[in-house]
Image (cartoon, rainbow, N blue to C red; front, side, top):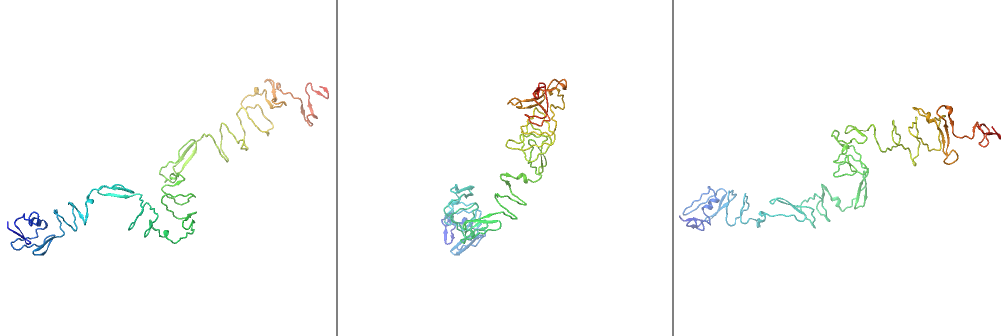
Length: 414
């Protein structure tokens, strides 16, 4: 092969160090040039023209070939290659630098573990590091910082401090601000720790977030809330929309329900049964049936007024009273409206407890005799005297007397 002259250097063959495998040769020139570059080789002069993404510079014999804005499918280089800016789908090299920074750590799989006040997430190639419940001695931040869950610090310094969109300048101002009572409000506390209290609040609209408590009562035309409680009772069923089918009242003992869900009716059964009934005021009704009825007690006194007849179907009537008044002038004994009482009339009469004058010995005014005729009836009690139209005393009677057989009259025997 003929000698090749390139920029003053000559090579005998392609293996020459200057033009061979390790140097600049036709293959390397072809890799960085396009078909638009014409290389003329002659024994005297070589002319190199500009091509796509290349331009030439320098003077003969020091000519340079330069590449600009190259778009290549594949690029292989040996030694150290520098790019002012490069974009590629795949980069492969022994060591990659950005400036003087080794990018090994960026392309290395580094595992991130949770640490103090931090927790991690994401994926291996896209990890996230998050801060939780941060407690640090000093925090200095530039720009705008946001604390969504609250911030506690002994000293807080910033150009402007906001709570939501409110500038807190006036709160931290060194000038004392006095608070005066206003409409529905009164103040208290101290100048540095004032309190503002609401009393008898009357407003057109009140919108509150979170939970609101009204201890003194609440009156409103329209009340809307997620959950409305009266003490601990959920008022959902009271305010439930008509027609949604909430069953609020069910039947129970002695109770019948009716009506609709939003307009229920509660009725007692026709024959209710109760263990105890306590009521005040006036109770009106028809028949009252009870096994035992007690009116009043030793500590509760009162009167019982009965308008009508009293019918007692029992064995006895006891009246523990010091006085007994009967308007009727005829006391009817041994009465039974449906049966013959002839046999039970024997022994009928009055019994007076201790009437004999001796304790435990009663006096009897009884009808004795047989059941044959009325003439057979007599009183079985011995009567000392029967006084008629008596106007004197027991010891000195002066009225007419009925004498029995064996009585004495004026010291004489009748």
